[in-house]
Image (cartoon, rainbow, N blue to C red; front, side, top):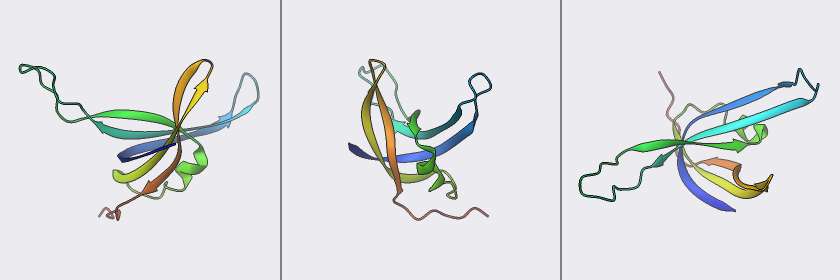
Length: 103
C-alpha cells in the first residue's frame, strides 16, 4: 500500500449490463496530474504535468462525487498482478484541502 498526495482532475463511473454476456459491470477511473521530471539535458525542456488514470472501485468514487474538481487528495494505491502484469489500483481517495465552491 502506498499513499501519495495528488491533484485529482476528474473521475468517471461507468455501470451497466454487457449486451454480449448479460453480466453486470462497474468500472471506475480516477484521473490525476503528475509532475513531469526535470529535463536530463541542457537543451531539453520538461515542464508542467501529465495525466494519469487509475482503476478504482465505483463506491470509492461515489464518496467524492459531490466535490468539484480539481482538488488535492491523498490517493491510496495498491499493486496487483492481473494476467501476469502489474497493475496499480486505487483503494481510497482522501481529500486534504477545503474545496472552493464554484460561483
